Length: 194
Image 1 (cartoon, rainbow, N blue to C red):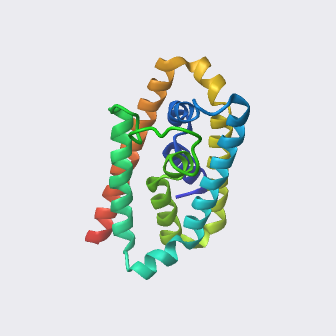
Image 2: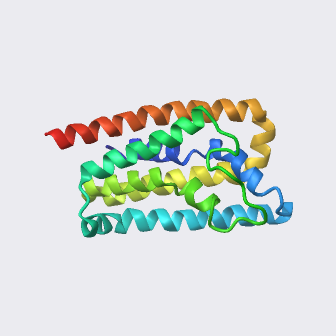
Image 3: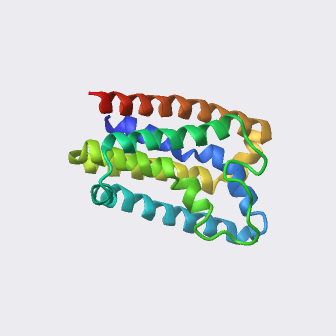
């Protein structure tokens, strides 16, 4: 996997356009002047979590004795489940029930931006091609930056795209993620059989 592919994969998995309705719903009780601050704070929390998984994930996996194939297959299953919920939404959105008040860390930072599939992909990248850690860091920072710009502009984008546009984008990203999940799963099976 090259840096551009890693960037695009992480961007699709972070799904900033699909997260706009969830961010807006979670922030509906937050005063408008404070919403940008909350979004930025949550994005920084997510970046810290993702960098920890990028740099320390392989050590945790080695300590737990998990194989690269197991991580790849588990990441594929989690990604597939999230993608299916994007294509076929359930009541309450992708993450289920919504909490009242100002969100803190959960659900915006984790699991929406720094979700289990993003963490699994980061661990996979460093576990399989750890010598490219600098490239994976650039890909992560790029995907996070694009996600941050989109999520900070969530209110104007929601007005521009409208409800149907946001639903269409989320379903399209869900279809792409289903394909990525199947490829990850097949790669994991192929590696375990080799």
